[in-house]
Length: 233
Image (cartoon, rainbow, N blue to C red; front, side, top):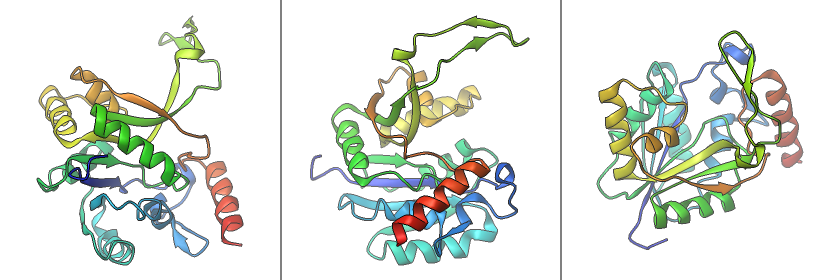
């Protein structure tokens, strides 16, 4: 990565705990004495090229998030912005605050605390040289395509299928262009890479590992608790 290229990190943390059956939003659940958000952010703290960190969240968690950022990134430019109705809105709000100093932006799910810093570095290098890169793993299950009635229409070749993860890292100019197009055309993407793909920009895959799962359901939370408790021993 070129010395002149600086990195910003955006973490959308406005999600609810509904699918986990919790009243507290997922990023603010505590495991091993720290919130999931803290466990996640710590994986990015060793990166010397990281210059700005922006977390989008709900107003009631603003002060708590500011304290977390001050503790983890005392020498970085950090800020908390308003989360939106959709994840895409939250990321757009954060993207609009980035300074002109940064050349790359990483978007990472607040509830993926098991990303390895080594994979983040590989993704940074690929995005810096080629414009856009994401962490992903090969699909392990057979995938079916169905019609609205539930009738199977096709079975894609699994060797060409990947499960997207985060971080997803882009040149800032590329992601801004993708978000502007999505806003103009009223498009809601399933991830940031899909928005970049829509404007014809290539996005490259970095193979990660399955430990980088997203905490979504109760089983995910139990597994995360076990893994983080084991790491703390």
